[in-house]
Length: 391
Image (cartoon, rainbow, N blue to C red; front, side, top):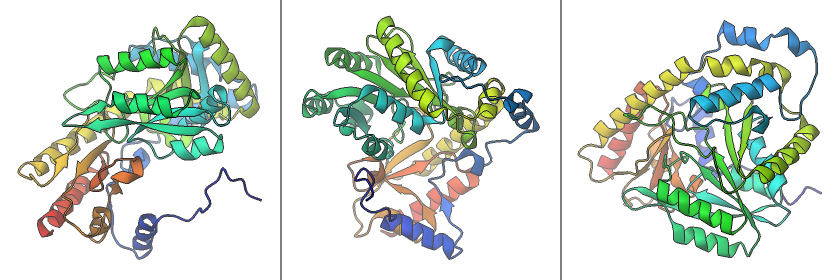
């Protein structure tokens, strides 16, 4: 009776079962996969946040399918401060980035249509697409000493779509590679999208966190665009408040197409009205007060990046596939073990993600978060080094 859009089995994979068993046994694990800012001493639940959530207006239910106007104005100010102005009328609120993706698949694609997604990237694209009966075709972000857009792979994905490609997703910076498209890649990408009458979805949730020495936010995809363009953000990363479940879609592109897309998003939003009123009313305060939290995150990133660079020095047996921004890094360890590295490291009480979780082709790639507390991060990579020395 259950829909075939759900997985045939909901059982966790072997690696997840092993991690759960280690935790159940009371082992003191160093979790180098943690990307929840509320668990690593970065997010603060202040009296000011509580006060903002307790607005008297929250006692009235006056839903707007695009979201509360003051909240959308706050998003517009935030984007403008990042150098990417947008009108509040071109912003739609959602309950988070996953809902943003689901709304956009409903907006842009018929069942059986195709959306192009980057590989490596988030493992959540496939289940969301399955639920919306949309097919995915991956295009590669490839490594050859630096990360770059594989245009041959992109063209192959367009061909494989058989004329049914409706949109392409970019993640800027990419998670987990931390890569960012350069100007030539952006131009080539947009040229293909215009030629195939496709939309662009740009996930920019990590764009406030470039790696030092750069301090200014990354260039985004708002502005004058040749195709309908949807830029995603939310308070989970930019404010360190994932528990408040608020995201947004900012829409750019040709005027007529932009208006049609906003009308469609408004219709979809009116069916769900999923963003809680107190969170919407608090958003102006949350965005206006994000600077101290973001400073803490940048300090954590710099500290852990410096520690990683120092640890890597003199280790020719390990490659760091470095990006430019974001909260994660990719390491490639020697292919000299009979067992996978993630299992060998779990035996040393270190939790890492295998690269294949994100579509990384190398079987010896590991993904580490950059935001664990500094002492935990140093201890974790030291244990990776010990495992390398013993192999």
